[in-house]
Length: 310
Image (tube, rainbow, N blue to C red):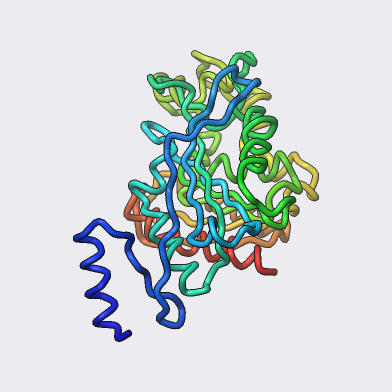
């Protein structure tokens, strides 16, 4: 079929509501993968279910084989599990890269990182200081085991990656360092790494909303830089954790030159470079927004896809 005819068929499919056919690496038509929203994983740690969205690759129902899995963490503020697909159009990118043979077919899961519907306080994917809400423990003790029992995934580190943007970029790298040997690669777009100075000068409502539950509500000045903060600061982890923890995962950092988190990402790159930790660091023109994250998603997926194929 000619390229013109394939394009015309795709437009007709869209108009009729039929599945859109995609051009594969050799021009073959292929069905797209599918997104399932409003899925729920039980959690004994949190005492409630955790909502998630999942992308299943085009041949998931027919191939009956196991796939690598990527956990994609969303950003803060009003971010939720559907963002990567509704705003980031990650499914469209996955369909294309899989169809072109540039990455292996993979399952992608995005959990809801909010503590509740009101979302007055970010989780930052951390455990609360008082132990009342333990999102990190939930992820490793409940969520990942449930997902990897429910879907046909390649077991172990070699088939498991993690990625995220902003708050989720922080979570992807923090989890990789705090749980060595769990992920083969971590890709972070505009990761929300704040320096000590930025934490000290943050306005009180902003601090309490983002970090109060994890480090202590109402803290001011130097009191914010407590042991809980040091334990969860990625910039501190590189210096405080055993080198084997840091080296167990390959890292991909991508941050816009005009992004408010550029300083933290640049400092992390320098620390990793000085410690001879293999990683990639990209600086492109751009801000902290979906235009930047959509443009960086291909590089993140190619980075993880290459690791899966090694």
